[in-house]
Length: 272
Length: 250
Image (cartoon, rainbow over all chains, first blue to last red; front, side):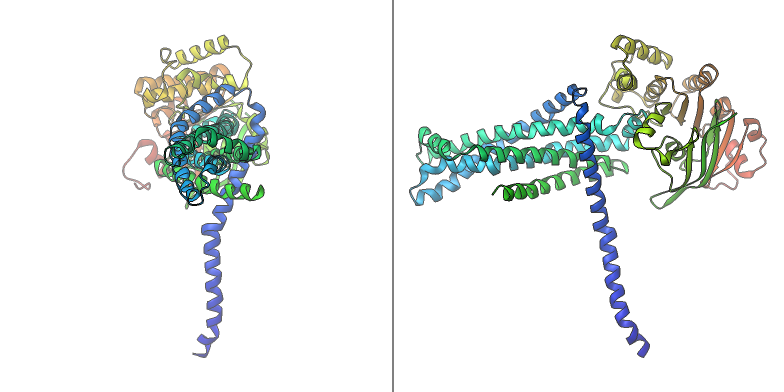
């Protein structure tokens, strides 16, 4: 009995040790490994940009592919977001008789925040998943190994064109989303709040600063980088056949979407 | 003959399975070594160690006198230029046509003109009997045809070391003979060093200068085809003659 009582504190500390070990091996270590791997993919992709001219055809193909896939969804979502934004903000402004300011509020919100974030999230789902599934399938079917054996660096051959394409496409689609969102906002302003085109545009011209647009574009550029690197890095980690490809595809979407929001906060806070 | 490839005490565990347990193997310049062994015995893993796609947990892989573990990525890439690797399922890039797949090493590593590349691709595709399939996508090819395209791609830069992972698996007997003949031609004409991984014993006996049997993560016997035919070791005998009864259990 005495002996057992003496052992009790040891068991307590051993239990803590077990839990820390489990947490380390089960969560912290894999997360750190994954982050390190994604960072190495990012650095190597940036270093491979010197080969961009040689890969221009593949880059243009990826731009067209990502852009055409993303454009319809980004435009539809931006249009309805503009409508909803204008309706919700407008209904509050109406209470104070300030509905004429709606143009500036919709435009600033779209350019600074909603345009890039919505486009980023749409592309994380559409393109991030596509990249992870595509690269993942190549990984499990030994196509990546075949490239390595042929002394072709998979990063410069496969990842860099996708990375650069997303750095172009994400800001480009954000411009479309901003314009369509502002246009959607105008429909509500005109139809429900009785604000005319000239008043709507006058407010935008007065209050929308170049800085608002630039910050939005910077966010879009960062989101493009994140989505492509997360998608490709996840794909490169695929193993165990179709199950593994499905797993990394899901992870690419989840991690990409979360990181879009996390970096949105950091960039927004930095430029506050 | 001098050793061009040496594996010394190579250990490898994948997941929870110990695949290689101190494997020792020497491949001499210009010879064709066939590695035989059961499915899952680590034959393909051994090949992947040789080209640096896998690094050993312990032990050394020495190619032309240099340990691959000490090489940088650039040095390893340079080394791989001298290798041709035929993957089990061809490992063709599905987004490229057959012709583009075969041309890929030339486009990436040489300054050859389009016409020269085109001529080389046509020649190699004719060599594997697929001259009419240049513009076809890999997805419409049969398994055997993919393997032949993979072979054309592997030999297009005329490598000095060829690694074949199950070269006759999934091929009809006639095409198997063609591939076997091709391996022999590569040796006689270009003095290519070849390592063939297979469990197709007729093929092994047709192409091998030496055979090595992998069992339990180690090489249990090396010798000439004749020595394998006359082997007393019950494990080797059972495998070579495909006997159901014996020390190797299913």
